[in-house]
Length: 559
Image (tube, rainbow, N blue to C red):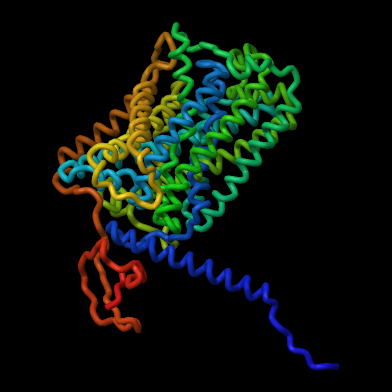
């Protein structure tokens, strides 16, 4: 037998080289991210393991069209018809993109977990920093914490609706829905104590579940539903069941469904300290989440409109607590409806988990700067670098916030209104500061809008102001204690309490974001430690990043 020399496969060698090169780029990206974070005043405490896609996936989950649009679909049809559900959603999506682009530009400059309130500190004049940060931080916290309640309460109602499909004699009650809601909260709370690596994987799966699920519902629903309505009805029907004489006002009320759905995308910023190449990845996460949800939601709303066979029976006088369930049943039968509901329920589960990711990180960051009650406890991380205490704090708050659902028929809509208004105002302030106080001194990041920054910001602020005023107004007439929109009451209570605490105590000690880098190690090139100082040091614009790196959460500079 002749002697042979086995030559390594060139493709295998090339593949390994490419893999090594990609790993080096990822490692360098993490180093650059940590250096920038040090420059902004924070050491790397959270685990930076999310890719740009995972960042987008979490924000996309927060904007879930399956969990946001479908539970309130019947309510929207009663206040604006199919016109509001389709064209209202598309209108909101386009205008929300202006908000997303404006926030993404700011996020690219300041990619920190604190997000909106940290940006406020960087953009406002020095004398206003503490109060502005305090208010924006509490608006932002309220919006994200309330989103947990709204999402999981919606899932509970949808789950009991699904049970009635196979058990027609089953009649749910607010108490049953609330009990299911608590169970869902507990499961979501446990899930969000897992390491961020698993959270990223779960949300990556969520993206494909949403995309394939929407495609499945649209195709099967349209193929099987008989007696489809005309295009003029499906695409332009107007119905005013609000009790108000103005059809225009009723149509505007119907926008609440869309604005509630396209919310929470700032989560991309709140996980920026866990995202690689955060200056590019987090802004892209914000914009991609809104854009993808806009397209997917419009397709879904058009398809659902073409599945309506009898508007009066299925929507106006529906005996099912979720109108979309009745439409599915009549169009496709029990078997296919159950498949649809399973798809929607799993999507709701993914969405609820994603919202808690953002809310817990914002709470952790706000507590890290000493602004939350029990700040020391809330700012603690687990061994896997997860803010578990912040997770459970928001879970408990959401459980308490859901109690009015037991007594009021419009409690869910009120909770949704609180979420939408609080989020909108927390978005408004940093955008407004960007185009006014910081217009000339704002230092752009890699993602920026150029000459479109100011026009985009003006559109965003105008839209936010309009919707914030709209969603505290009554949704039904005549107004009674059972159908009144109480959004202004808990909203005013939380903000009033936050302002009072600031006036009495906070103004004496709260100064805004607190820099926590306190150790700098100076080394020779061979790694030998020659000096160690306990002091806060920020990188200047002239620092050479090639001579700096992060090690064990501290800034390291060569001699």
